[in-house]
Length: 246
Length: 236
Image: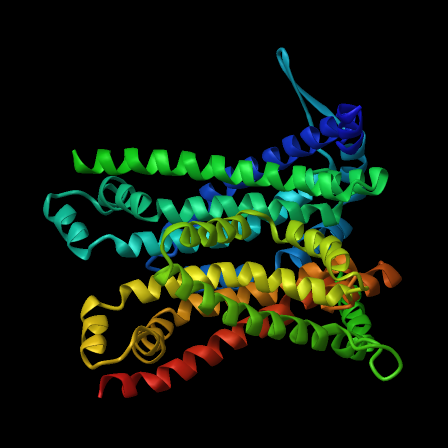
């Protein structure tokens, strides 16, 4: 009797399946954002050391605009604003859900919402990661560069083998924080209709009205994801430090 | 998309400018940029007060109380703000058994998240103030409350000012999330104008982004000017 009452209070299994699907989308969009924004952020940080003043100023403008304005209007800008400019053929092509054949692997193109959400998140996070990495490069002692030059390394070599590895080690904890932020920020893409965890959670709430259970599950899933990233980050940072000591 | 249609978009913005700034104010309730400012300012004030208190708590509490505080703060830092807004939106009316306006739930959610981050900044500042400062203050005969109030906290806050400003800017940015619970702040009104015309989304949201940028950047400049002027006082 008691168990029956209990199970009536809990969410039906099929809703758990929905949450799982939402979680997968959250993980996908966060992972891709982390990947792209790390690459672009590093490029921007390296470019911000350029000897040309124009490039430095452009990068500072980029970082300023994207860091001092909220993500939500930025997502609207990409989804409505850029979506409006894009040619209709492209949107129709995407609407058909084309698939790319790679032998046995078939990759279906994600939805238009997903692509725009990913673009918005990437542009936003790139600015933050570039700034963290730039701070990391400034944390590398000036003597290191002079020593590298004295050893006869070229400008590029001293950057590649001396400065970048140390900057990566210094900025890594801050980067892990940014990666956590990306997972949390991915929840905003629900506003443009990406079917990720928060969106699914709202859907379940309107359908079952079991608000408390639904939010509890969703919150737990987010916390789990954040803890996972944090643990992995700590583990990897320890290894980085040990490698640095040798 | 040619240049003339671009300028048409700015005419739409110009025609709706009053609506963007204060919503339907004289006839209806206040909204727009003014509401965004009210929202974020209240969140900033509450978050700073809570944050300083929690930061002091992190420094002086020991045992299970310290663990509990750390647990609460970690929880607040681990969940998306959106989820916290959903929680407060759903729980507050249940707890107080009255209709809580949506804007209050958003302010509370923002303030909680902000205070969790500010608490750690205060804590970091307080433990960086050197041990000698504590010892010197104690040897002057001050008690612990006085030491923290007059010696440690002012130094910690001045040291952590850049980190506070970052948090305040984040709170202004995050106030746009009130859109989710249909509070008539700036972003919400922008989407409304966009839904009405549907022709110039690029210009409208570009305008929104620029306005937020100006607000956040102005706050940043203001604080750095104020703290710079105070600096000579500290060193003479």
